[in-house]
Length: 473
Figure (cartoon, rainbow, N blue to C red):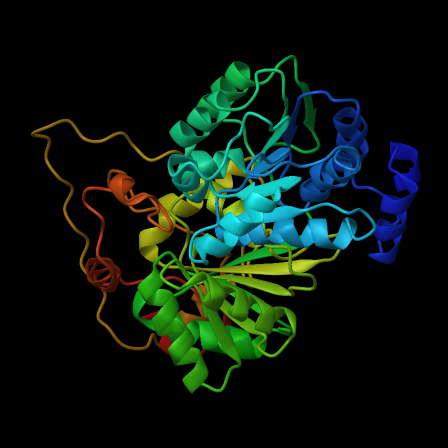
């Protein structure tokens, strides 16, 4: 099947061909004809499947007829983050160059007066984050009663960031007979409830199992001592054939510290996190795309939706707190049919998080670097002991220092298996990246406390030989 077979106009086909695309992806094949027919749609697809073009392309043709009016956008696309909104705007620029469509990008961190001026001229496409849209609506600068096409993108991410109440309020301000498209990588209960409430007889398209990981990505874990993670990452960056890489951390402070450390080690590094102003983020992304730098250290603000071609490696400096975030992080590589490598640094404190990620992946264990994978589900941790029960005695800690050569050789020869600690599971803090201020966890774990906790638990298991003896603790 070609793009000509899905019903796009000649002008749009010309722009698509000039962009280097010939065949639509599965979600594009199924979604584009339905959108062109005016149907409501639910698209369930993992990142990197081409879902952005699945709604951008038919929207360009739909909006090719009609005329915009001041402060009354004809269509609205809601995105959870500034980066995703800017990326959708780039797609309209690329594919809509032979259509005379006006668009406005409403995101935080940019000049509001410029955005208001664009709205006053009239726009065909309004691409917005919920916060900035609600702000301008409250100021009376925008009306939504003329918006006949709504796209809710990355709905599960919207849920994670606490935007569902805003989306519900926005939906009530749009015409009841509009066309609504909802896209999500997963379909948790609250998202299904949202779809049932605001979509009318939608067609559901699912191109892959929700939250499945890309088969083209070679996934590995490297087990390290918590105090040696920076050194281990540096070794990996030099040992692997890294063309370019995105390195993810759970905390903004760690992103800054890690970027500084890697620069001192001679790497061409940039960074992106939630504390940066929008122009700074865009500048760092452009430097990475232009290959001025080949390593980008990022927090989860960049985990979803960034479409950067040719990323060879993804490194998880920290194991993500939420399993879904692992899927979206590693999805930055292995895109558009290319292969990629995803390596996660794992300490002894990360056992529960890794188990949750593997459970989401169907119970298949992620291979240890130099080890073997097992296609069997892990045993779930024991339930918490009843109150008053005797606590198990702590095993004697092994003396610190290097292992004898014979002992170390025997350890490396054994299959590497990650033993989970025999303690009750503790709730991990929720992500706070770009989360509305009133929704931050009440007891956010400080970075210092986390580092101290990791430092108390030595990893005495086998390690990849190329990392050197010093990384075993």
